Length: 401
Ligand SMILES: [Mn+2]
Image (cartoon, rainbow, N blue to C red; front, top):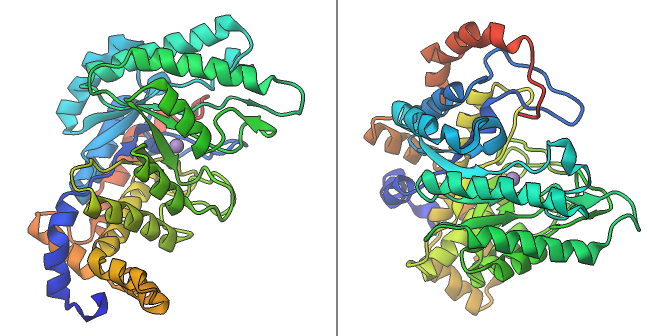
């Protein structure tokens, strides 16, 4: 059992797993983001892309687990593909790789009735043009993932032709796939509701799976942990998607009610552990298959953004490390023999193992601070960014991020 491992044995077992664990930070997580009702501005929030790279570099310096940053085309590439060279230069300067590219199909007023699902062919064309430019940006950045989330849907019964919209989505996604470079992936994200409250065009993993399958072999499903109904079994969805070889990546956050974008593991750490366990189990049986992309998708309205990001990464590392303690051969034997309580207790023992000493040891071995949050507070970085960015953030930003 895991609970008989001494701290040294736990450290030994976890070293290579922690070396291999990386999670991407989101550029929008460092900017002034908020709720549907407004946002509380933070003087230290990143205002420019350079400030976002600077914050990401801090998180990487403190945790060693975040070498890349996901980018949003509307907010990070105001001149579109013309900004690629400058973004690459910032990436080099700050030692952070530009990560997944997210088109934005929900802020422009023309998307009021949808983007790929809009009844107006001109709007659908506009949306496709933006996505195709995003594909080109992602290709220029070294074939990074294209990450697609659509706010499309309707609020009232009878107001939209659901099946026509399915066809329009098929067309848009297939045209997107046709533009992908060799080896480039497109990930289709789903969400049951919000902003639409009657129907959402890609509402669950089944719809995302069918769209991705139809789009082509380089399309996969993206699972955002906050995009489910209450009590839905997310690890079972992951098991299905991995079984079908269709899991492309995860967006991590936690939630209490809906898509709350709270810190990973803050509400239900056991769920995040079960997610990592399900992935680890699949990986142990299919070592040749690349693991899904891990990306943080959170926006903190109250917590300091850099502090919250470091806290998130530490939580991710802890919960991932716990999942890495499970001996899959042993668990599978217990399952086959239907030794239910023993199997459950074996999994629970991994969850309850305190991996923090092993993480401290790993950090020290890698020249990282043993206590990244404490080091961040002592570093003066937060005070410096408050000082330097304060005046810029007084005005507030108009968009979500
Ligand atoms: Mn997401």
